[in-house]
Image 1 (cartoon, rainbow, N blue to C red):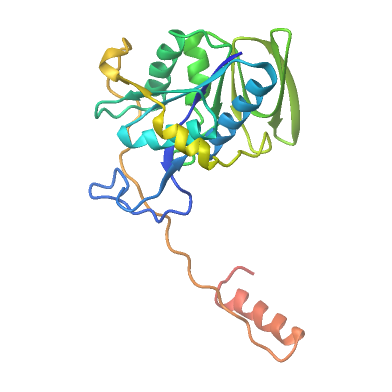
Image 2 (image 1 turned 180 degrees about the vertical axis):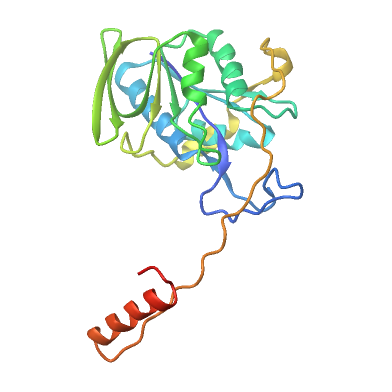
Length: 256
């Protein structure tokens, strides 16, 4: 079973985000960059499938030199090989990113492609399904369980209010959802081995995929407005506090 995992390096969710000059990007100084959490699940699922069925796991990203850190993390977890496509300073939207990744995947012979269902930085939800579309293979999104047998994959995916079981022939692409697995921590031996593993770096200009101007551009970023501090209602009893709360809601907040 030859498996490819698509991953992205994103700011850690606990990072303090500030908007850079120009209002169209964030300040990157001091940010802790990590592998996208949903992509961690994708790596873990690929490793579990490899253990059960054999084969190899290739991790792939389209990103700057810094994104090598995310690839090293995946290698330390147990991935076999890693590929980085260098955007050469170009800004690609989700559709262009998917087009480039699909072009590289077509050069291999992968039975299964796994990706996080979204990246926690832009919440685009686009790259995984678009990669499948460009490759001409079926895809199942928001997967919380899967089983591979006889050249087919059966997936349980989340839908509003429940779950849905779908089955499709391989090759196929699936995207991960919380509940699929619990990603392992990289062991110290794995980290040491990952440092020595080569990463296949390919410049965007040499991939053979035409990339034009992005169809989607970031015009401006705005931080959410600061919320007013909460107020503690004082009183000698629960009844007094309730009366004071009702009075405040009626006379000051004017919501009742």
